[in-house]
Length: 356
Length: 274
Ligand SMILES: Nc1ncnc2c1ncn2[C@@H]1O[C@H](COP(=O)(O)OP(=O)(O)O)[C@@H](O)[C@H]1O
Ligand SMILES: [Mg+2]
Image (cartoon, rainbow over all chains, first blue to last red):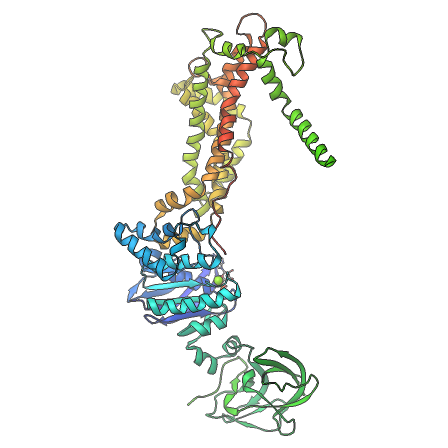
């Protein structure tokens, strides 16, 4: 109940291809997050799954049933819209009941399900209010309530937190995570925010320009991005990239460097860039470090700090500083890293490292 | 303080100037015949309701109740019919892009033509169909007059409803019929009220077709009012004429007063965004 398969899914608007052949399997009960920059086609992909847009080509399978050409309702999915799309002339109760009344459920059952949803979402005090008299967070919960009473096989969320302020966003994020445990239904959740994606997802599908870049667990995306796009999109601050070379499958050389770096496990292909996350860089003496440069800026964040360094070669990169001993701006520093932490990319941005 | 006083003075003068015809008519209706002739002032020497009484009794031939009823029934047909016809069309245009590029401009441009153009073909058509001098016939042509306004107002109102509401209802299992009745219709109620009020005012005040297409049974109030000017025989009885105009103008004014809260309102607060 709730597995979804996308097979070579494509969508064009007026001849312009927006979704360019997506293959993906979402498991029953999984919390799947679609993440990617604004305009990459996340909403379109979600709307294709919901049945709100007609598929140009490809297949959508839901629980072994081909639903590609079915009406939205017949797909047994519920959607929470980015704008909430509440029925403004109806009370909260009427909003939640609408779907149940549409399928003409017995009155007692409608009342029971509505009460249950209101309880789970703490909406009981507001049942007789109109949406206009609710706060953003409450409207959000009504939108979710409208979805859960239907007991769908999958919930589709389109950027549900984007209209909330920062404090409420964290709170609601935790609520949604808890809701997933309670309901144990499949969730497809669209966001452009990689922090939301990392914290909520069982697996994340990273999209760019209508194509699926990589779909994996948050940890795997972080540790083993398959290309430069994923490497830079997941993780904050962005992964540092430095020009490098190597094609022997064992060692790489930083541009302008003197010492070859031995790559654990080896790699295949022709290296063009070496990637290092800011938390994998350490400050050291400039004598024996593989990278040297000058501190250009320090951002103190309390728990840690972002240190910006301009390398001798002219490249800029950042690293995480911890503790109270932060370098002065203008200080000459050396940067150290473990060879196991490096990422390698070829000229096309494909990741090259082999992992055991 | 002084500024405020000046502001009120300006308002008062403006209100007086703009409403001068209305005030003059009402005052004349309240004057005695002698007063009308000898006293041009806006303040009558004595107030009388005789003119109003005369409107209802002045002549066997002139039945103001009949004119009012004719106008009311023809105007209601001429207002409600276009709303009923345009509701599904407005939905089709706004949501399915049906005829947006052709039908909408065509219908709207039709309204730009002087109505007299329709006079001759319409008369001949009505003669053949036996619609001359009938309330239904008059109502039909008033419906044609009101159709473009209804179409534009209702189409815009439907287009203003966020599409996501329809989509949400669709995901909730509602088909087009239920979406129309449970979602679209309640949400465009203010536009329906606006269409109704303006359509009714237009229909009620219509004179040309009333004059042309009716002779006795279905004469509307606008045409009937003109009969009163010489009702007593001899010269124009200004007091009675003024009284009949006041009575004839009352229904749309009363409707406007009752419905003005509905006009221009939006039902969409709280639908989208936080
Ligand atoms: N109905 C539509 N007609 C034409 N273009 C559309 C339509 N819907 C979306 N697009 C285009 O598809 C692209 C992806 O949009 P969308 O899926 O909303 O992106 P995202 O949700 O990732 O920000 C955008 O370039 C957008 O302009
Ligand atoms: Mg979007």
